[in-house]
Amino acid sequence: MKEADVLRRSKDHLVRLLDEVERQLSETPHLAGQEFTMADVMLVPVLARLELLDLENEYIIGRPNIAEYWILVQQRLSYKKVIGKYFNGWRKHRTLLKAWFLVRIRSLLKRY
Image (cartoon, rainbow, N blue to C red; front, side, top):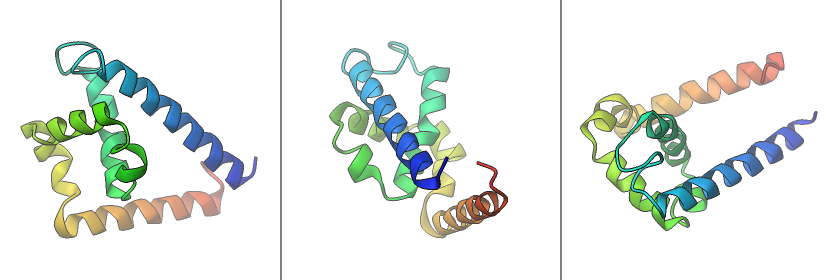
């Protein structure tokens, strides 16, 4: 499979996932109901990575329920302690550089 095909399929999968999340968040404040659960814990890194890569306009902002959810998640103390500290200020650049390096190595080794 060519890189362009992998990228297209991954993007399509992400869009379907986010559309489903948007639908669910129109019914409940969190993915699995009224409380923040492991389902939310699994989604937060995806949203954080989209923001880190400056893709929030394409994937988050256009989905109002996800956008509102994302604002609330970022206000959680647990988010600030575990994820937020790596995505602000100079640490954002370090996180990006590390991710870029790992992707390049995997691409060179053809280990996706």
